[in-house]
Amino acid sequence: MDLSELITSAHAYLGQFDYDHYPVCFQAFEEQCAPFFTSLGEHDVHEAAAGLLERLDKKYESLPRRERKETLFRDRQVLALFLSPAAARSSESARAFADALREQWNRKYPRTQYLGGSFEQILKGFDANLLGLPLRKSAKRR
Image (cartoon, rainbow, N blue to C red; front, side):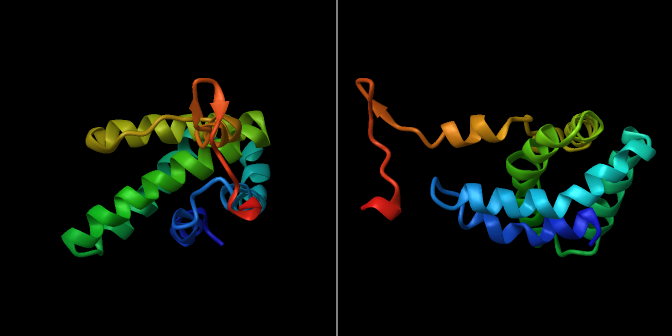
């Protein structure tokens, strides 16, 4: 599966973005990206990032305006919540690819920029504390 298709198929994970489901969805996405990340050592990461951005642009151009905006927003979420953290855990070349992609994306779409983060940072974002006491309860433990 092409990485642009993988990003599109990961839109389904966004509906399950919570403390209980994110780790499972992330692991599935990470496994699907592994072949691409291992192949990056052979390619220039900036060219690979530009190629992915070009394929995503072609997809956006074929969509109606309203759908284009929504797809762009969802793709940005997948890049920030799944692709960048998966690349950071994979290899140095994968991390460089994710950084190059983020820089190129932010330059091309300045109104829809995103930051790179790690899986641990994102998972920690689900923590809720009141006066230092954890409030998070897993849906599985309720």
